[in-house]
Image 1 (cartoon, rainbow, N blue to C red):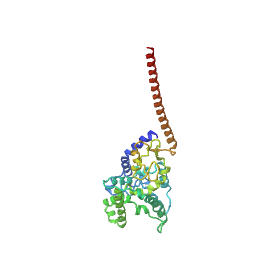
Image 2: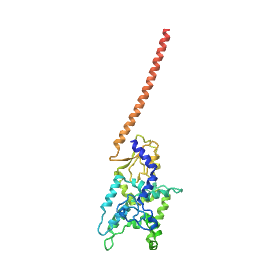
Image 3: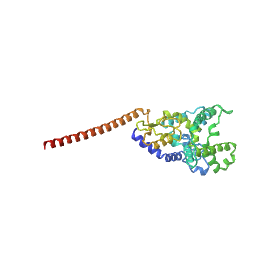
Length: 336
């Protein structure tokens, strides 16, 4: 495996928390708006951000791709957003679920909650729940906003309105605290969404990224793109000793040695740091890397053969030299 990729992989996985914090800050640059109780409405809001970040967050510097897609799908004039779809496909091909592992603010927030010291529960036996997010993507994001419309032909953003906890966390709560008018208008819908948020918060302490695993439609879309993404995980079979440490370290329940580009892999790099031989690393580019991997295995085998040959040759040389010296001594003693 290329040493350059291995070194970069170790560096990125080690400083992932700082990268996540930086991405969250860039996604929410307008922090003074939390005090003012208003929204940033500049030109930046016409551009989608890669991760799940509510448009209604006072500090948000861009638009959430899921919210933007629903807004277009539920409008009376349009039924499909080519811009948002193209944007997501582009990001999916370029990065895949690397966005979930490094660039999503809500994913980072769940990880911070999971660091709270308490008993942690495994999600390995709950793998069927991972398919729920695909249902949410298809039904609540695509179909319902386009098909369930009012008298003027407009549909609701069903996911944002009834399920997304990020909207309450980043939007409703800070805006209601700073704005008395919004606070007075809160009703049963806010109670419902706040309850969902509380459930997600509690689950995040016990389970690793429960919303990402089970409910996030953006994660579902990027998961579909993981296998064709240019950003991939690679395992050097020549270095792998099948110790299983990478699989045990993965909190997304993925065995990178068997399915390196599994839909649930968020490229967090935990397997990279856990591997004792440096066999696991990130790889970026076209192709599946099999030629590179075969070339590396061939190189490792040749190096081993050279070492074996050199060792054998040295041993034979030393033995031959010792034998000649012994014969010379015997000849001298006979002559004397």
